[in-house]
Length: 381
Image 1 (cartoon, rainbow, N blue to C red):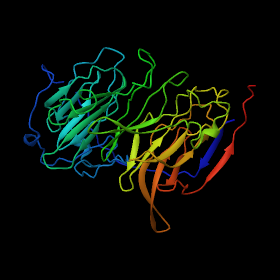
Image 2 (image 1 turned 90 degrees about the horizontal axis):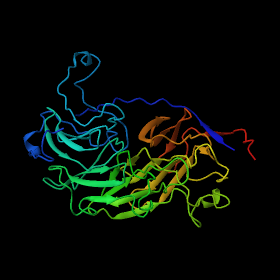
Image 3 (image 1 turned 45 degrees about the horizontal axis):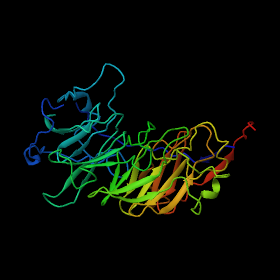
Image 4 (image 1 turned 45 degrees about the vertical axis):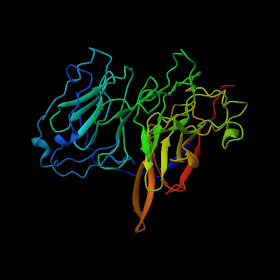
């Protein structure tokens, strides 16, 4: 049986600003000191979602309703690696200190002068697949350590020096962690990796995972890594093991070797409270649930975890025992609203079913209540 949870709807609006990029001719890496290319009026866009909470809002005022019609192309950067068909750029660039970082069609990581489009460096991880964005970390010190983090579809987690594009040799093995190791049999063609940008909180890299939508496949577990060493720090089982909270929602051993239940679209972070939020996918296989009878936690859940430890803080399941691939297609937006004259800290979770759920950030309590509506049970024996 599938059950929909029907909340009160709220409309959210925001203004987004992002850029587009295009390949440094010759040479794999070149270096230009960042201090020489600072734009006079530069403003950072350090996360794919603008801030770590995914607001996708810029306070820059130069472009407005009166000036937008005067916009002209300032520069074009050609990646040089697009094929005639079957290739795409899905990356939202990030900008830090007037440097734009992006991935190309063939997943080369590139740094450009954001004001001119001039290439600064390029790194080729020799990966394939789709990438939607990069992560950025610094130690916060003047002239300190800066890293660009790429989580790639073939299972590579790469740490690069943001100034030079050179791999951080202290990270993993020569700058790369193999996410597939220990999760997918060696030589297997099952896909396991990442297409969305990792979330970064303090010294944690929290990696989104893609897995198959049918059995078999690797686990959709949420994993966090140390940004300096690449060592896994914590792992949250999105399909609970025996003895863990939620395991009883999978009957007859339906939890075992279950794939899906993954945060493929990335994460948002409440920096103030140290909470990482995920919108989790449905359990595999899509459109068939006879081998996983039950509510199937934590599939189709908005999930809040302690960002430093991976401990579950709260969850809310939007669809029980999903049979229609109504996975949550994005993490919730970290925001606030005024209710009865008081500011309330919330997260807003969009869904494929057309509803937006609003939850108290700390407790997961629905702000406007939820009406739970049963759906007709399946007629399949």
